[in-house]
Image 1: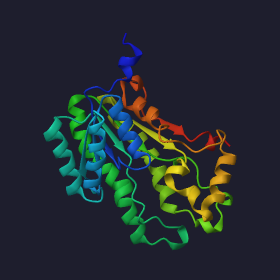
Image 2: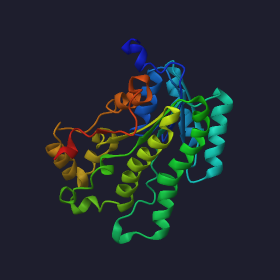
Image 3: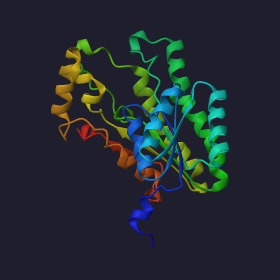
Image 4: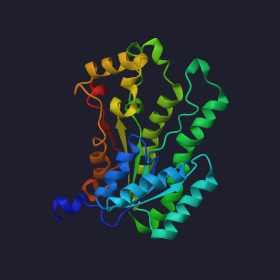
Length: 269
């Protein structure tokens, strides 16, 4: 029987985190590093990823930043090849990146914008997972964590959004729901290889970081969110660390196909 601290340790693990320097992504990358993993931070802006990784290295952690365009199979394959060449394995994949450039309301949706969004936020995640699984399957181990959203288990509560906030994008909700289904499919398909695939559905992030509370047009939403969230607050920068590190570690050895809801209780109503 292993000690609980050993079960949670990520020493020697190699992790890829897409979008690994953003509001939640930065916390995910930092948390995995803090638990002992070597973290590859990847997004379209490879230089910014390396700058973030440099900050982690200066704290004594192991991290690098690399470029990744999830809409390009060539870029996906180049990233995976680079990680394998450097480290010889991939133990953890966190599908966290979100391309918001083509988010659009239903009334303004076009086939082109919906497809461009899905190329990254759905197809890109699937193709990256496919590329990583090629190396996880022979090892008979691995953990894939898909970062969905509370929007992946409910829908926007439109009365809470003032007109000044703008309409909510149809493709964000659709894509985040799809990530939950993607999680279940991959968990069922690759469980026999002891590859665990799970999902996290986070709620709103701290407006002090996101800038929501600084926008007068959006402050009404911020106040309404806090008033109606059971815990009475937004998530802070540490709140996603625990769920990610848990699902990445041996502590979650018998957990797969699950969606861990991290929303302050928002979706219980």
